[in-house]
Length: 391
Image (cartoon, rainbow, N blue to C red; front, side, top):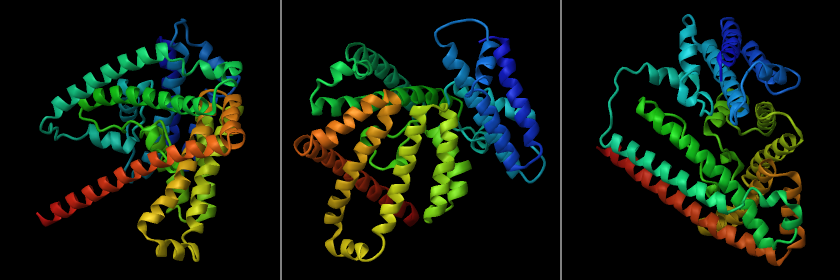
């Protein structure tokens, strides 16, 4: 990337470190968002990009990834420095945190407090069979990379949606499967990338954010994210900070709006990102509104009288519909607004009732399997916790 790129990243670090010394959270946030806007908005981003010489395939990705993640890490450093009661963290702490190579270009982001605590841990002990598990994960990721590369070389999952003439001729089931496959592709890409990075970081005795939850197991907006590091960052410094316990509708609305405003700036403001942010913000709030509504009489009384099994079935129907809302809201950011509109019209209007209800039925069965798996896992964890307390 060249020394000019390194100097540019270092200049962002120096500016945000200087602001961090003031120990005012609002100033740290304002300076951080201004720095982030400088690489996302014209004409500032073009000017900074022109400073980086050379031309190769990954230059744009590495430029925006390196600068963007660096600014987010510097903001984390600045905000954690505000919480430090005695003195300040040093500039060397920031450099070690920001320029840790496995995380530098693609993340995931570890908040500074977690990274600093783990790096300064002097008791470095490997668990039993830990190296074996690391080696197994590395080989598994290598195998998945090869399989995915072959699959997507022959299965034109990303190319087909761009040909609207072809897409309009597909059946409702093909469209639904294509939209779902696009999200699976993005999840696999994120899971493999973060899995490889995490494997390397684990060799350094770090415990990085885990890869995203499988798209097939998502049925609530609160768990929908493809970058767990960015999600943790946003939750810690924006969503949880403003929303508190997330039990009051006005505070939750303000928290989600602020969270998706920062997310929009992080992704780069444009029409598709605006639409994506609006619908995902609405989905997250709508879940809270529905949960609040069904927690008060007479709905809570009716649910209590019908039994746990029937309650799970009814919730499963809503979760199945929610799953396809997640698919539609996110597929537009992966492909195009036109493709998302086509899928929505075919599944909701033109395909009703046969295609709509049959797709919903299959999704409902899948959601119930996921919920049962989560229930069994929760029971197992509770049993292990009780056993540990007894010992």
